[in-house]
Image (cartoon, rainbow, N blue to C red; front, top):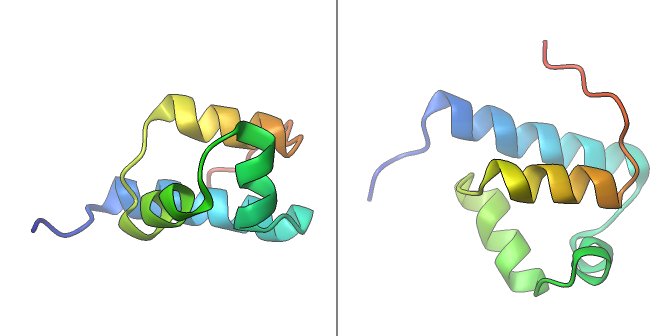
Length: 69
């Protein structure tokens, strides 16, 4: 199995950080976007998810600005 590349790691860390900042758990995100919690956990642990999932998640937790660096 291929290891996460740098960009996958950055995307996963960005979403995890925003969830933490907002105090939102994976279970709560699951309810907000209508996806199973286990699927969210897997996506974030692997860092393999679409830009659409990232945007959907950030929108669901009301993130309006993202600092990339």
